[in-house]
Length: 100
Image (cartoon, rainbow, N blue to C red; front, side, top):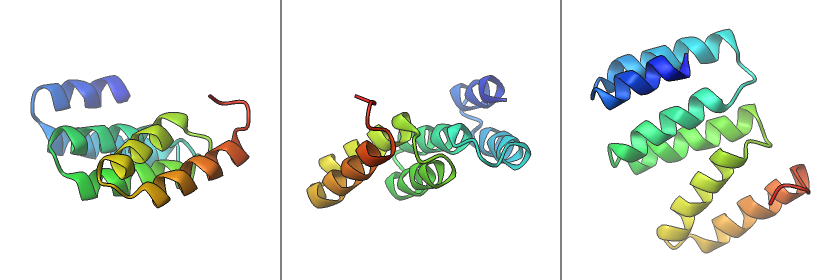
């Protein structure tokens, strides 16, 4: 599922990648990985707001999704929303205390 979506994205077929990821998420609704990869595709396309929404959705599906937390935190840091970044990281530590 993810590999096919990544192949579409590499080929600049983002619409196909998003459709594939949506189908995967529908089949596995508790897995935040599909939303995380959608966020990465949005980020590559410099669509920051859509990337934020995708990373947030990944975290809502899977609160301990470290990659989504890190990606969203970096966006917050780079856009000088340091309070949001700190709150996000604090919440993540509470959910996954052994995650570094």
